[in-house]
Length: 160
Image 1 (cartoon, rainbow, N blue to C red):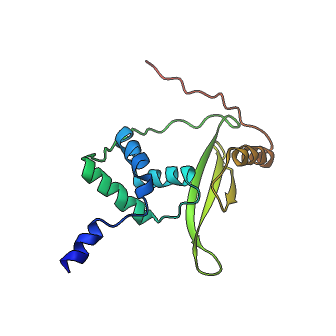
Image 2: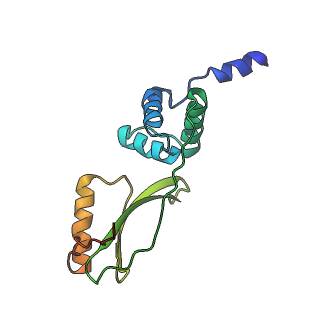
Image 3: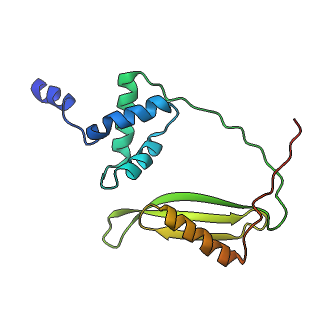
């Protein structure tokens, strides 16, 4: 029994080949979340298949081993007035896990556009991460859908 327990501590982990890059990332960016690490791994190693809990556990163990506490930064939010109609749009990316027809979990990626004044929306979905070409095409499609391009130069002036 004790031999088996000892062997589990020395067992090779699926993320061990990425250990140095993950360690570098969390040393350089102590506020980095395991989800962000997983996103970066998917970008760097597209063939790597690893679950969220595996990444979370691996990052937690590295932080403990190297004494790298997870830094939290408090973001200050404040409401800003809506810009005039046609002046601004927001673009966000996301990923959701859904089941396919065979019941297997798959990731779907999306890009969402929202016109700031009217809240009019446009979205595109892919079954893989977006490339630069995809993002450019999605912008062109959104502008066609909206019937124009927002004036992106709206700047809120603040007293200093």
